[in-house]
Image (tube, rainbow, N blue to C red; front, side):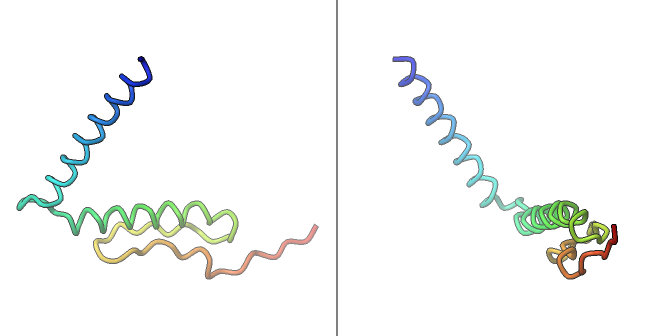
Amino acid sequence: MTDHLIASVVTVATAIIGVAIIAVLVSQRANTSNVITSAGQAFANDLSAAVAPVTGSQATINTGSSGFGGFTGLGNPLPSTQY
């Protein structure tokens, strides 16, 4: 009985969140393209910071408003080290 109740509550909550997301995306006052661009830039910045220690490059943080810049780490060769 408890599992069925929890599943029902989760289903209703998911439906409410889904309707809210759709309402925000189709709203006339929505700034959807800038939100998607910002999310892409945030992901690219996170990816650049994550691979920087491996590639030896510095993470390039892009705070601009165009494109998915920021991910530049894989173009640099690994630094040579001698032990």
